[in-house]
Length: 157
Image 1 (cartoon, rainbow, N blue to C red):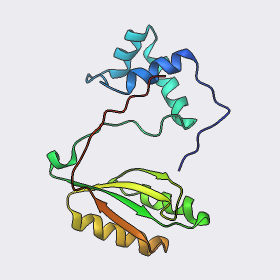
Image 2 (cartoon, helix red, strand yellow; image 1 turned 180 degrees about the vertical axis):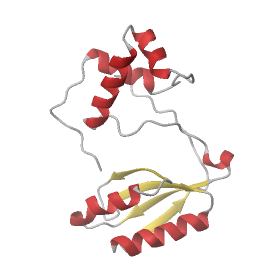
Image 3 (cartoon, helix red, strand yellow; image 1 turned 90 degrees about the vertical axis):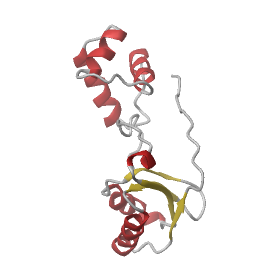
């Protein structure tokens, strides 16, 4: 898991860019130019600032959010009991799987949580077995949703 650089501070321009990219990202051949024009910046400045925000751990990833079921996929939430000394190596392994969208550390015995998307639950189960075999982490639970609730999360900076 990438750590946030606590010595890094956001200026008002960074905050404006972050506010703009969270929702309704421009669907155009030049989205960063569209954002730049809206904010009175250059496209190059927007791209440089976004790279700096990613490098400093402020942005984890940029990408589309899709409803897996509408694309013929399944999704699930997984939780694992990972010894503290294995957290870094465990998250590197799970992050290699294209269906893992993100992971996070939580308090409690099940301390690493991650989401997994794949064409079938059979594939997810197979991948979880492979992850367990590769990492030595035996307790990984698969918690598929029985009902999905989507909340628009937008953080006003």
